[in-house]
Image 1 (cartoon, helix red, strand yellow):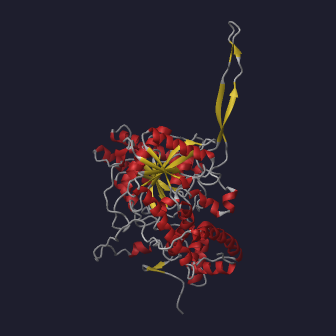
Image 2 (cartoon, chains in turn yellow, purple):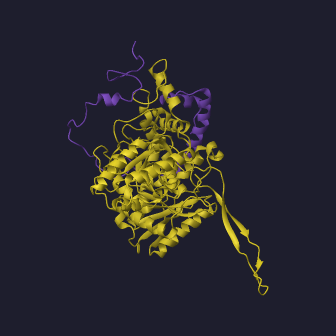
Image 3 (cartoon, one colour):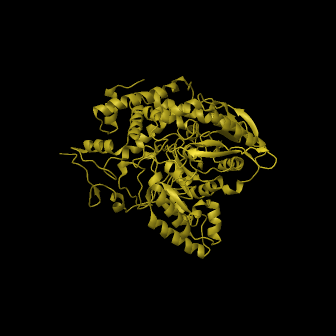
Length: 521
Length: 95
C-alpha cells in the first residue's frame, strides 16, 4: 500500500485512469503515511480524513464512468493560507483561532473541479511571514532531510590462498545521519516537507518573497512562483497583495506543470488575475533548448556565498550549455536593493491587510475595558513576534512624515528593479539562471537567525527580486551539498512565460536526477 | 533614521497592539536593525523614476454595476466571537 505514495502525480494519474489503482486506495495510503509521520514532522496542522475519503469515493465513481478530470483521485495537501469551506483556515496564526470560512478559495475550487482529493491543511509560517516555518503558532515543521557524512571503511586485504597474491578488500562507503532537526524553509514549510516526505502527491503553496522556492530548494522538491496575476488570489489570506502569488510544490517538474495548469485561471473575484489562456505546460517538457539564451547575472555572486553554491551554479550552466543553450553574462544592477525595498513594501502592505484582525469579525477576542483596549489586547495575544515586528515596521514607514522617505523611495527602487529585468529580456535573454538560496537548510532554533531578524531575511536574497518585478521563477533540485543536503537552482522568466521555465527546468532535472531524503520518519 | 522607545510605543498604539515596557524595549532594537538594513536604499538615484503602482501593466477590469451577491448575513457573522441577530457585538463605544 505504502508504495502508492511513491508515485508521481503523472504516474498515479495513468494508473487511476487505467483503473489499476483506485482513488480510495491511494488516499488511504497517504492518510496512513500522514498518521504515522506527522507526529515527527508536524507538516499538517489538520488532517481531513473523512473529507479525503468522501472525495476519493466520488473520484472513483467518476473514474468508473470515464468522467475523470485532469487530477481525478490525486491526493493533495493545502497550505493553511487557502480558504477551504468549513475547514481549518488559520494562516497558522493564533489570531484566527477557530476560523472556518463559508467559502472556498479559487485555487482550491479549481483543483477540486479537476477531481483532486484534499488530505488536509499544511503548516506554514504565521501569515506566511518567515523563512523557516518557525513562526507558526503550531510549531516548527521538521525537514525530512538530515545532515549526513560519508564514512569510509577500508576493508582488510586478504590472500586468495592460491599463489600468495594479496587482493585489496576495497572500501565501503556509508552515510551516517545526524539527528539534528533542520528547518524545511518557509513560509511554505509544511507544503515542502509533506511533498518531500511522501505525505501528499503535491501541495499548494504561496510565495511573497521566496516562500515557494526557498522551501522547495531546502527539501529537494520543485516549486514554481508564477507571474503575478497568473493565479487568482481570491480566498488566499492576504500578506502583501502586490507580491503574493500562489503556486505548486511538487516532486518533479512534470507534476509542478500539471498542478499549475489546474491552479491558474482568470477570476472575476480577483481584478489582478489575468485574462489569458492557461497553456498546457506539460506539452513543453522534453522540447530542446538549443539556441536558447540563458542569462547569468553577475550580481547574484554575493559576498560570503559558500563555494558549493557557486559550484552548483557552474554545474547548472554546464548542463544548459551541453543542451545547446547560449550562455550570456548579464547585469541586474539593482539586485542588492531588492531585499531592503521588500522589507518596506511587504510590511507596509501587511500592516494594512492585517488591520482586519480586530477581534470583531472572526477568530480570537481578548476582552478589554473598552473597544480600543479589546483591539489592542486581541492583537497583542493573537499575533506572534515576527508578525508584530512587520506590522510595526509597516505602520512606521506609512506614518505621517516617513511615507516619502521609506515607502515612496522603495516603490521607486522597485521600478528600477523591474527595469533591470526588462532591459535584459529586451536584449534577447530568454531565461535567467541563479542559485535558489544562499545556503542549504539550517537547524531548527538557529541562534544566529534568532538573534538578528535580518539574517533570516537574507534567505530570500535570490528569490525576492522576482516578486518585486512580478516575474515567474522556478526552483529545481540540482545537487547535494557536502552534508548530503539538497540545493536548488532558480530559473527566472519573462512575464507569463512559465513554459520556458518548465522546459528549461526539465533539462536541469534530467541532468541532475531526482533527490530523495533517507527515510527515518 | 532610528526610532526610540517612545516612537515604538506610538507606532504600537497606531497599529493597535498592546506592548509592555519590555516588548517596547526589545522591539526598539529589532526595528532599528531593520531600519538600518533598509537605509541603503538612500544610495539609489531615483531622480525622474516613477514609483511602481502596478507590477504588471494592466487596466483594472470593471464589471457591470449590478448586484451579484448578497443575502449572506448569517455566513458573514458565522465566525464572529460575539453576535446577536446577525449583528457583530462589540464593547460599548458611545455612552
